[in-house]
Length: 476
Image (cartoon, rainbow, N blue to C red; front, side, top):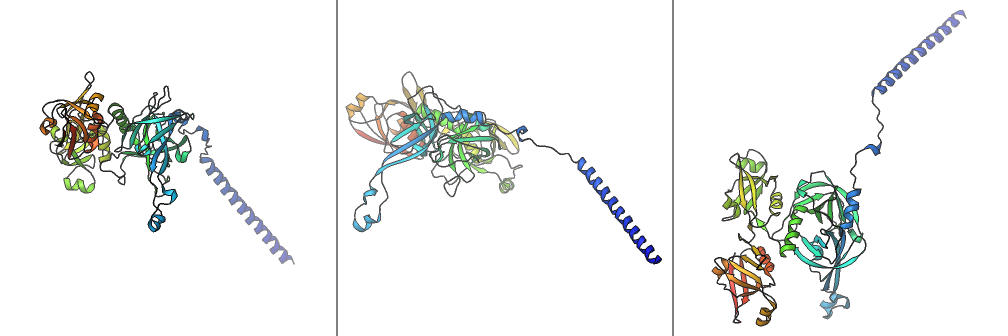
C-alpha cells in the first residue's frame, strides 16, 4: 500500500512539473509574439487624406460648353423587301423617309462656333443644337474635313459658355482626363479615365488619306459621345472624342479622340478659308524596330526612318535624304509615323518647320518649307482687292451680273494670268471656272479644296466672255 502511494504521488508530481513547464514555454512564446507585433508599424489609413484627382472644377465648367447635336437626313431610301422581288412593288414602309442621328459638340467661341465630328453631320439636310440649359438652335455647317473627321458649325447666338483649347502635345501618359458628351441621348454625361496612349493609329478607318494620330483613353465613350469634349483637369479642351474600339458597338475599354493640336488648326482653316490647307513633308516613313535597326545599322531604336524622299518635295528641297532618322519636329520628339503626321498636320503649306534627324550617327537640323498635298504652291490673299493668287493666276468669286450674263449658277473668275500652271495650261484672263473634276465651284476655297484632294490631274470647265464653253486639263 505504501509503495502504491509513493507511485501515485510521484505521478502527480511529475504531471504538475510537466504542466508548469508547458505553461511557461507557451507564455514565453506569446511574449515573443507580442514583442514582434509591437515592432510592426500599424498605420491607420484615412481615405480623406489621400490625394485623388478633383474633377469638379473641370466637369462643372466644361459641361456647360458641350452640346447635343441632332442631324436629319431627308429622303433616305429604305431597304427593299421580299415583296419587291416576288410581286414587283415596294412595301409601303420602304418609301424614302427622314433619318435622324445624334451626337455631341463643343462650343469653342462665345459667338456660336461649335466643333463636332464630320460623321455626326455628314449628309444632313437639317442640324439642330441643344445647349446644356435646354436652349435649342438651328445650326449651319461652316465646313467639314473628312480627313480628320472634324466639322465646324455655327449658331446665331452670343455670350455663350465655351471651352478654350489646351495643349494636347503636353499630355502625359497616365494623366487624368474626362470625357463629356451625350451617349445614348443621355445629356451631359461625364466619365473619367487616363491617357492610355498618344499618337495612336487605327488602321481599320476607311479613306484614301486619313490623319490618324489619336489620343487613346479608358474614359467610357459610347455612341452619341462622338464630337464631345475630352478635357484635362484644368478644364481645357485637349481632344474631340471620335471613336471607340469595340466588337459590340458599345464601350469595351478604349476610346479615341482627335488631339486639340489638330482640331484647332482644322477649325481655324474652315473658319478662314472654308477648307483645310493640308501640308506635306514629302517623305515615306518606316517605324524603327530591332530588325530595321540591325538592317540599317542604326545605333538606337529611336525616331522614324525615312524610307523614300518625294522627288522635288519639301524634304528633298531642304536637304533631307532617304535613310535619315527623324527624331523631332519643332522640338517635339517623334517615335512613330502617326506622331510625325500629327506634328505636320498642325501647319499649313509654306510654313517653315525645323526637323532634327540623325545621319551617320550625327544629329543634324534642317529648315523645311512645307508643301501642299497637290504640290508646292503659294496661296496669297489680298484683303484690299479681294483676290487670291496661286498657280500664277488671280482669282475671285464671279459677280452676280457675270453669272446672269452667261447663264450660269456659280463660278470663279480668272482676273489675271501670269507665269505658272494656269498660263501653261492655256487659261486666259476673263475665264470663269464653273466646275473642277465635274464638281461645281462657287468661290476660291472650293477650288483650293478640290486641288488639295486631287492626286494626279484636274479637269477644269468654264466659260469665256464670248459665251464659249471650254475644258482644260491641268496636271498637278
